[in-house]
Image (cartoon, rainbow, N blue to C red; front, side, top):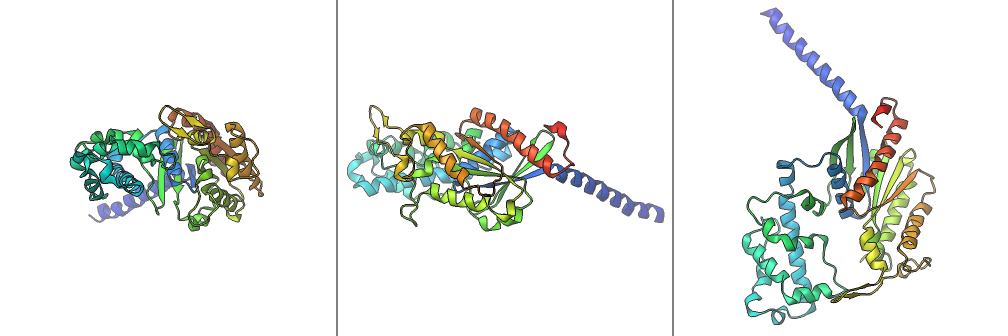
Length: 357
């Protein structure tokens, strides 16, 4: 009895030692990457794309977790549409008699609740009205990214609805939270750490060998309410400057993602269609030193030059232009990013084996 009881603690001790050894090996092969930037939606989409490219989401429970977030953002986008319509004119006069109850139905919906068939029907009906179409033709109005769900509202309202991977990519990031996303890249485990707007904690991650910095090219004309004349692109440049020249990241490489190249192109060029005319938005309006005109290549090179000029610490910066919703494009970019990440990790630790490249 005594011999048997003495073997139990010994076996437990051996099990703990074995687990510690496995954890040690795993942590030596895990590469933490800090994800920073001022455009939360672009960061969120990029992180999800990286997970999709390297394994994807679990079809059942993991995808289902996004359902409430999608319902919430769709309801909020519909309410924003109603408020925008009301701001421009007396909405009752713009709607047919059978549609005049729609705004109240949508505004009374609680974003925290599941998307009910009644609210889904109201959103679908309002989306098809002439008033909504006129608003979309107004060049001063921009539909939120999650507004693209309106055309699929009935699918989202089904009781058995499970989000697709494309649905997940269009879901906005949660605010004021630190999130971690893990996936495997060859023999290594990648841990993406997004601190969201809580950037005061970034010094806690000084050991990272790679930082992904994400900024939206299309933000060049998005003026900050707090600082008239300064745009979100200026804000992004200030943040990038503080990161690339920080004493906490003197041994870190920066992978710079310039996203939303498609929206940037549409703004730089003049868009004309049968039912819509959008004026060109010159980059020089917000960056007077730019003299490259409406050429998309000149404009993109200028923005990249502005970021590279901030790199006084002369860190290694690897820039990539992307359209984050284009999985094929992202897959090609990540092939290059993968090599950068692994090379940085190999330089930092001899534990990593070269064959993973």
